[in-house]
Image (tube, rainbow, N blue to C red; front, side, top):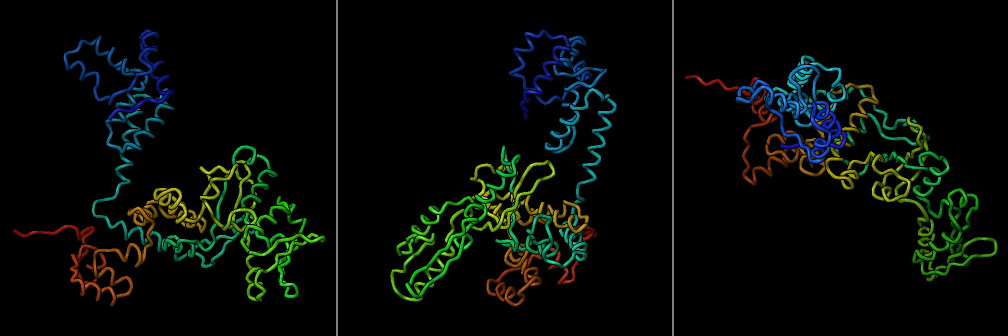
Length: 450
């Protein structure tokens, strides 16, 4: 497989070729087209192919490698490509080794690569390791030390978010709506630098109903609904009286909207029935004038980098992305179902890991990220976020006994009997039920006597 060089890497290769004694005009001509192939040949191998020593050295130099002395770019490429590491780790390793190339010797380069390969091999799971059970124990045991308080002060104004054990339960249950949805909205340009601009944005985002701007009262005397707007509230939320009047005309109340001399707005009921009057009063109160429905409150705060950002009570990722001044690439929400809907399943998987790790760390619990990653993978492997319960992973198992052992035992056994299902006894739960060794760890090996 060939890898195309970046502009920065091309420049570096060009410099190496010039240093190796190749004319600058030739280097400039080949620079744009230069694609290094997998470097899999050593100097000794070139000599073994009956190539003269002088030509062999030229070939090594053209590949950006030298026989001895300082480490060349080609040496790094060759050594890294020959190692048995995944492509992602190879790419990261190349980048880091290039940055410190001048400080490296051949021996140091070999030592670093051997150490990386050794660490990678150690990090791999042994074949037939019961990873699911280990993950369950690793999260379950520290989970018993979690505080049971549902709401925790999030350190942001008066916005409270669910943390601790209730939050973990919420995540693994794949709830469509979290109990306390919240967003962290990052801003860009002048909005991130100017507090007043950020404050204006909060008013654009925060939902504003007519009931928030004044008093709404139903009068039985003239069968009308009266709206008294507060000037101070209109000014604070950057709303004009005309906007409110337009909204009242467009709600389809069917009644006439008129402004009185004292500044009040009157909406008459078309049918002179009392229940119609009450219905109109409720409709007027709950008319959205400005903002995004679902975002109850927004607060401006300064982050660690000195930028202004918004914390919101309520979440609406898709609507927020369209607002000017919002840096959507850095905006986050704690609603995993919404992330899956807007950004896709990979983003939802990452969100599950981030949220669970964040909750555990907030409680001061040290759990290896790989256990949480396994749970996230299991929950999202079918392309949708599934709960770890009878409506998700546990309920979708092929084993009848395993499903029955989890919840609704009789229903599962009856259903299986009706359809004539068989149990292969391949998993952990079903083998424990029938008293057999599980097919993991030492139980994975079967001895055969001749």
